[in-house]
Length: 382
Image 1 (cartoon, rainbow, N blue to C red):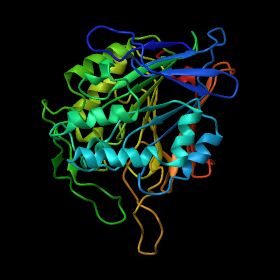
Image 2: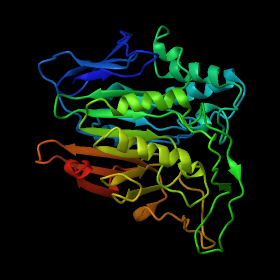
Image 3: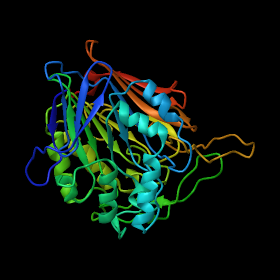
Image 4: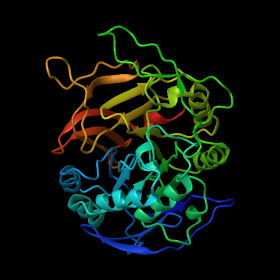
């Protein structure tokens, strides 16, 4: 499994960190977090990335039976998209204890023995609900985050502001780039003032769009880094965003709160001629599939997004009749919204010509409940 280290401070650096030996079905994978870098023990048997699991929103002090279903699908990698714990504290000792509770979950321990785990954070594991750049303990929280995910003490990620990271996995012609953004460390304050609609027209949150040109989601350093990543060669690119990217109507926290930053990311994908981009997100305690039509905002191909949330805290929204349901405005949604416990799954069939991608949400028992199926060739500029 080939990999290009891409997390940078200044120039691109290849680091050698602590290696965790993980035995998979037919081969030994050495997982090195420090660049991050990957390698197979048998370099002659490079394998493409075919099965990727992802999820978000895991209460560390509640049962997490969903890990068994994830492990049964034999993912080659798991991506944590944030709210990996519910820390919500300024006390770093308390925050560490909450990370320790996640680490002690039997299912999560089983997952770590079966595949590598990559991660970014969202507000609750960052430290406070809906928090951004103003959170006073973000530097200390970052170190605890890196500790939990076994990033070596001498890694350059220890000196970088923010937990964003990226890697390219797979042989030539079957390379998958996983880009995990940090939407907390630099994010400007949210703007209140969204006007709710009438009951039945769709739920709307409290946040309004901020059109101030100085309002930020990623920050200058991360924007520069992201541009460099999108210029690297890869056939499929998975961008992990802790909160939703496409929706811009529901008024809950999303890139839609910062429309100029949302527009900037779409423009960056176009300007770098980055092909094969799909989005995955979490945060919402609901799951849905979305699609942005080609040409709608300057892209030459459709942009797909899958939101998967939560791993063990399903939606708390109920109708008066006691049905778990919330009608939420989202013009980009394809199909229905799923409200119960779930995780995301990406299957890539490299044997098909052209390769076929299945972007899925699966229920607690591992059954598919939502899916978007498309060809890799659909994600190319004409």
